Length: 344
Ligand SMILES: Cc1cc2nc3c(=O)[nH]c(=O)nc-3n(C[C@H](O)[C@H](O)[C@H](O)COP(=O)(O)OP(=O)(O)OC[C@H]3O[C@@H](n4cnc5c(N)ncnc54)[C@H](O)[C@@H]3O)c2cc1C
Image 1 (cartoon, protein in one colour):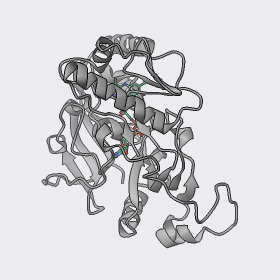
Image 2 (cartoon, protein in one colour):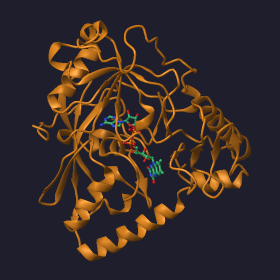
Image 3 (tube, helix red, strand yellow):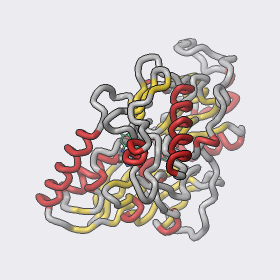
């Protein structure tokens, strides 16, 4: 059952860390792997030896080997995943987690790919993509929304606004999934998503499902202690409000957010977390870095908190540009810009 789970009081162990700061950016090719088993698009009838070595029989139909990721990533950069799984049932996620753990395979969860940079060498491990209906449900229960981790954040906003439930409407238009939004505690208009989270169903360090309260998720400015777990679903506690007032507010913010995005390309990322006192946009503008370029990657000149990947952009160029910005901002202002973008 998708949304089941009892409350268990314990601090959340962090199992699967992804790069958080530019200083911990993995080296080029650091996450890479050799394609020693099977070429992409190989259509031989039996699963490869590598697949059967790593995954039990009842998972072979949800895992594929050596799969490209770039098409699913907003930046459109990077090599393949050694294994890519698209589970269609929650139980399969638990089993995948256990298999990866037993075989000591690195594991990452992929939502909508708007906040991930993959290196050209690819990701040497298992990527679990949450996109199937079983992981993307949206269910209203009285004043609550229960959302699957793979559901689009904006769909959750639209659903709740239509039901006259307030608390998520200011997040409309922020790209991505519910799972990633909660892990990264996304925020807009000075209010973060964690403030309306009632409970979160996760897979923990032992590969077991458990439910945490919002308080146990350690929400703080653009972070939580959920990074490294697999978020399965989230229950939001919302407030009944007038539908037309909510709709007006949502529409206004949606238009405003769309207008602020770079118009020249869809291959964009928002690499930095706004510091507490000032927005990353203002900070970068004040240091004269708007529009700077590194090879085929640049900061937008009007909204320089956006990074744009032009044709032929590479992950190295992204990492270099991010490093230059952090260094300059630190030198000129003393503020150490923290990285939002996850580098695999
Ligand atoms: C144009 C643009 C505008 C943006 N505006 C904002 C904004 O206003 N405010 C803001 O806060 N952010 C903003 N962002 C950042 C981005 O939208 C968020 O980080 C978003 O939550 C990413 O969602 P995703 O599903 O695409 O995550 P992905 O890129 O798929 O993954 C991001 C990270 O979350 C992890 N993850 C994903 N799903 C799960 C899960 N179910 N369980 C555990 N871990 C998981 C991944 O492993 C990865 O580490 C913006 C980004 C862009 C490109």
